[in-house]
Image 1 (cartoon, rainbow, N blue to C red):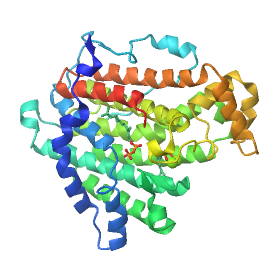
Image 2: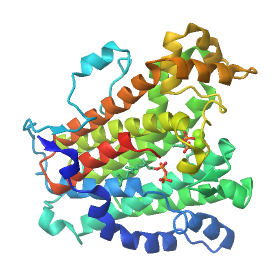
Image 3: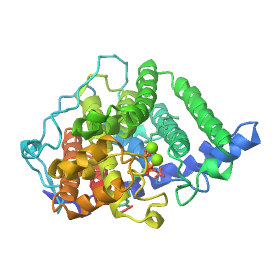
Image 4: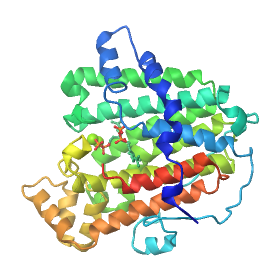
Length: 387
Ligand code: FPP
Ligand code: FPP
Ligand code: MG
Ligand code: MG
């Protein structure tokens, strides 16, 4: 058992490989319409985010290069310890109502051909180039969704500055997002891997489904943890988990292989852990720290994990959740109940850690490598981050 702090730093590990990312992506998103170039480039050059997704893609690419195609890998019993990621019995958690019986399930089989890639010949190979390209595509999709999201949420700030719709206008923001999405689709097709195109197109579909679910779910379903988790999967986890599976496919692993499935399962749980942590931070962190509005979810009528747990204990919150905090005083009452509850916030934190642990469990099905271990550390960082 190793301490988390001794594992390789995920961001340092891919730093060099992501450097050319900035230049090539700004080329990829330039258009003969200066306004679109400006709006799009802005978020890749001046105010790029943490590049969390391309970092994952790059690390998964390295991790799967170390795996034999179609190898059935045994869990070698290795565990990691930290204050937070203790190996715990999932059923303990289910007893608390945490995962509401909803589990990840696999998809249909698509076969892809692949050659033998090793950690030694991976870097600089065609496979590696395509995986790096996928990382850029994923970041473009992510930025497109953020630009649109800020229009939908009427959020004025993003990444510590003005949102695109504030810098320009709603119309420009809608078009800039559309443009990035269109560019991403062209680049995706250029990968010439129909399974990957299909998977990533499904990811796009999921993102939209998640937003619609968030907007239009029936009132009685808003109290259900399952609705919340499903929405979080669509809106956040789907992009990471489909990107992780696609990376494995580009690396020559078959669709139904242990390796590709472990990657997808890792992305699934990491994405959920990430969104749950994001929803916790909406209550616990300041806007100045987040670089985007805080305490914003209830304003949008959204109930996330902390509130849902509070409502399980305090029945008077339930009608408020169902009417999306529309009446005067609703938000204040919900906040008070949340802060008064000794357990609601902790349960939400436990839920994030539960999914982080599941993500680590999936990673441990891959053979040991530096990049795999860096992904373990990254997973830990996601649930301990403060912004
Ligand atoms: C995605 O950002 C960002 C995250 C999921 C944050 C993850 C952050 C860490 C793992 C940082 C911890 C760092 C260290 C060095 C321990 P986003 O989807 O909110 O948008 P962005 O693209 O603007 O970042
Ligand atoms: C951020 O969530 C938003 C998303 C993760 C997805 C947004 C998706 C769309 C707007 C659908 C359109 C999709 C495309 C590809 C253009 P949040 O509002 O909870 O997080 P925030 O606090 O960072 O704003
Ligand atoms: Mg938003
Ligand atoms: Mg939103």
